[in-house]
Each structure stands twice: as C-alpha cells, then as structure tokens.
Image (cartoon, rainbow, N blue to C red; front, side, top):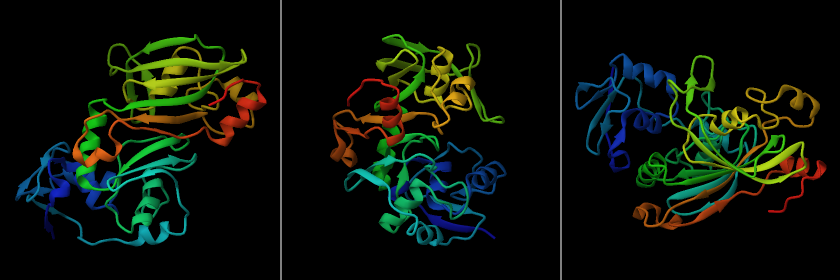
Length: 308
C-alpha cells in the first residue's frame, strides 16, 4: 500500500533523498536509499530511481511506508539535555557540538545533536546543514526552516562558507603550508586515503599557532569539504592529529593515555555578505566556539604557549 502527500514550499527545488530524509525522520537513510533504488518512490505517479532528482512545491510524492508524525524521538530527546547555543535566530541556529555525539541519530529514537534540537523546538523541521565527526567538537550550523536550509546548502556546496578548525598535531609543523592531496573514500571500510588517480580535489591550509617541539597547535582552513579531510591531510604531511586512532601516530597516542579522542575542533564558521533573505541574520558574520576543556588542558600541561 502506498501513501501520497503534496510537497510544500519547504521542499521546493530539493533533492529527492534529502526531501525524504527531512520528512520521514523515523525511516533510516539505508531504507530510504533502498526504496529509491528499487523504484518504490513515485513523484507525480512516475517512479524515480535517482536520489539527486529534484522535487518542487506542489509535487505529489508517493512512498511505501505509513505517513505518520512520529513524536518518540522528540519525547526521548527532551530528557537528554541541551546543546550549547552560540547563536539563535528565526531561521538559523549555530551550536557548539560536544565530543562523543553524532550529528544525526544512527538508530530510531537515538540521541544526537539534531534530536535534541527537535526537542528544543518541538518539531522535526530543523536540519543540520553540514557534518562533524562524532568526536569532533565545535561550530555546527542548523537550518530551522526550508528556505534557510536550501540557501545554506547552496552556500556550502559552492564553498562560500569559510571553515576553520583548531587541532593538536604531532611534531613541529611548518609555520604555514598548503596541503593539496586528492582524497578517495572507501565506503566499505569507512576510510579515506590520498589517491592522485581517483581522488577528489582536497585542499587544506595549515597555519602553526604554537608549538613546544613535540606537539603543535594549528589552525586548519578547509578549502574543500571532504570526509575526514583534516585528519587525512595532517597524517599525509606526517603531522597527524593527536588521539586519532584511525589515521594517527600509534606511538604518540599510546604515550598520551589521557587523550581519548582526536584533538580536532571546529573553531569558526565565516559567512559571506549579500546572502539570500532567509539568511540575512547571519549575513557577513563569523561564529566562534572556544576550545574545549580537553584541548585547553593538554595545551597547558604540555607548555604550549597560546592564548585565544
């Protein structure tokens, strides 16, 4: 049995997969992608098998699962606690993500940043615009409405948002270095590697902020937004991020037993001027998240002289 709904302005000119994920938040991404591939999704009575197919306001969307507003996630999330808010406007929310938390839930009713945001607003309309790894901390942008989400997605896609990270890395880095190394994602093994032949363009600007010779605090500007880019690029130049169990220095990680995660922090998002009206409240603004306590404590204990 199929169920049909008419799409609203919130879903105008959006990819089919993202539209489905935003409406049916209790259906896993895997189930949605399978339904698209197997032709279970119809737009205006026609089967659509392409996740990137664009839908528009007024289109009739037919799916093979029940249409219901599942409030279980919101009810559960209300008891999990809140996330530190850096900025809250009518259309955009800027958060300071803690370590150890996913941006999106990986199971029904699971804890995540976005689950807690749904609880804050009592609705499942808000959506994260970009991703941070589970153990990465720092600035995260959330769109509260459809117009803001579409405008923000275009900004990130066009690389018009400047993204700055802070990281503690092994060794004394050059004062400044531009890292250009194409990256290839191995989805089956969940790992990313440098590949000149098959990789996608990836560019990171690394600036040393302070060092004690053994470790350096660096600023990383990601000029592209590839999966695990900062972690792989720093390992590529032989200055891996301390605490990184996948791409890092095994010996250094073992010696620093008090470091329990990759010391990587999304420090700043900088938005350009003359934005879409839905983003006017963040036009030309920069948003910062101070270093988390574990990074501050490590820097102090190691005598790395740095002040924000």
